[in-house]
Length: 173
View 1 (cartoon, one colour):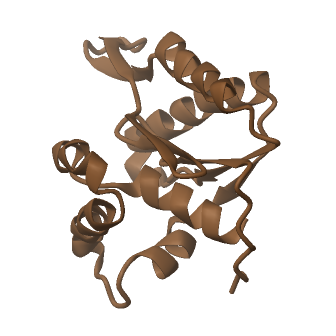
View 2: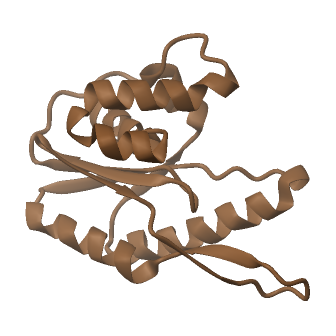
């Protein structure tokens, strides 16, 4: 179990719920930014007609650039480890494409990062004994309680994973 770090009021924390349906958040002092991962749909690259979702790189890059406004003495980012499951091939490929685009942005902005498994932050931020089908509901409810200014955005997205990962990051890093 991680130990709590003392308050570091000049540190910028970023949490990323990886994927095309994820969210990204940052906390600097008491200022919180929250963004549904911007994506676009385009024709896929296989023979069978279909679409894929991709990160809107320029929009996400502008969001990362806006963080420089804080002039934080240090920055740290936690990225939820992507789901990779051979039985869910298309979802795994989507998660890995999203991760690659996000990593390019983070590296371009020289932001130190670490991966985190969903179970690690959920064990701390969500109620004990939450079943798999209840996790998103618990995330939404706790996110609204901790970040009431974003209640409408959280309800619309149906979870607050990016915010909760960021809060976990703030507490333990």
